Length: 311
Image (cartoon, rainbow, N blue to C red):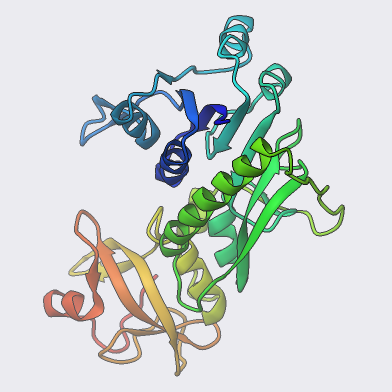
């Protein structure tokens, strides 16, 4: 028998799972998501989340409370009489009455190999740390931060030059498929839960703005991982001197290169840049207010002489 599901999610990463649950024949009785946020050039327009837009397209009731801590919100949640909650990148903490407010609990799709990278930014942190493997996991939620027992796991390799945006898009599809499989096992009473190991806990804290500025004194391999981990958002950046003014330049893609010099020095006419150890070749860039362009496109409009320093 199809399950009655409360779906809880907000960004694009959540949308494939919502679609997959509906396509599998389950009844999504409500979609919880973050409230609309200011957007547009002046920040005056309220923009609904990707989950809200998809839920409305599917004819699903949308709820966007600012908090779930109040008794009224908790009673409204319980009144849905759902079998389970499915949570994918929702963005709000679930208090105990919400975790226990369905017949068989809340199940989270998490983008790491738990207990490594518990928390807010697991995809970005895995790449920034140079991990060569990650995974999608379905776990039953408890009161801790990503501490619940695991139901299903699929390991996913990380390619050498892969960005967090590319990995994000692969992982969200894997997560959708795994969640549907988990719900099928729940229906059959055959979902097995395994406690997470006590060792190997690492937290994926939110990305801080201070981390996004490139320090060319660092080794090329470390900067390579940071650049691709922060691409496309928020983007790693440095400054170049254009005329007499310094201009911010986002580096969206780079690859390891040979050569050496003073940190930040332009080494050739193909945008090889010296690092504290080794060098990086810039592949995709974005000037302030511009669109992402390839290195060749960038050089057609901007001349960076050998010996120029990026900072």
